[in-house]
Image 1 (cartoon, helix red, strand yellow):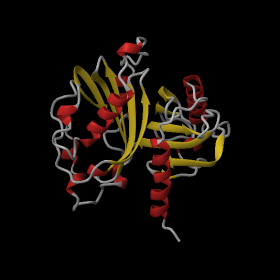
Image 2 (cartoon, one colour; image 1 turned 135 degrees about the vertical axis):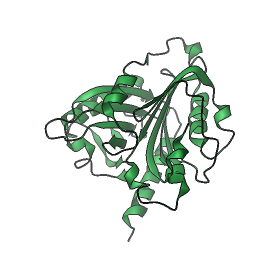
Image 3 (spheres, one colour; image 1 turned 60 degrees about the horizontal axis):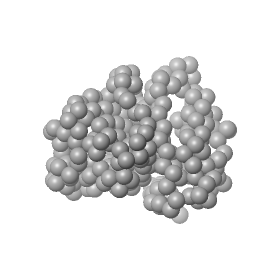
Image 4 (cartoon, one colour; image 1 turned 45 degrees about the vertical axis):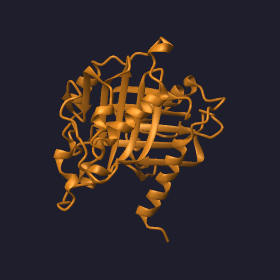
Length: 291
């Protein structure tokens, strides 16, 4: 009989496989993907998943572990302060960030990163998987109010001119290079940093992004990468296991404007689950996060 950890690993591998599919779906439209994110945001706000049309084989994850959708973060109502979404018509997937606050039956604020994937035929009305990284009180650098204050000032408008949009290949390359900085000493220099790049890491703000970057040091590659790439918004989101820091659930969203990195958003799942009490793994040192 498989252990819970083994089951989580196997199921997460299935989601990673879904995330690797790059065929263009004839029926997968931007409008359909964003309509699904609107339904998800409404469910998140109400604390009810009944209005979500889930595939019979739906996989739901919270912080890289298989989760019961009726008992996870979607089981509580959340007053939402901000939500943003991007759409990947190639992978038939979307990414949604939500910042919410405590009220009533919900005693905790949250900052969540969610990737939603749809059925293989491109029908965006059917949800094949919901993959959530949820940060809350006790998570690394967590302060929902401060995060909201930084992000609501950003400009995430559509890049109207097609010629000015970064390619899918560039966005994936930037996302991978960012996560590779902890294991590859040359990765940081391969990223096209903008001079006015802004990073919000939990609730920590850095401008510009390109100074004091990691340059290797860990032998553990950040793995289980799942991508949502939106050329129209110039963005890539990568959910992963931040193994360089001790298998921590993680989301990195990056926006590229005029070929340069403009914004970086980092959301960490609960650090306690990964590193608290771990005195033997040097990758759990907070110095590994210094960028």
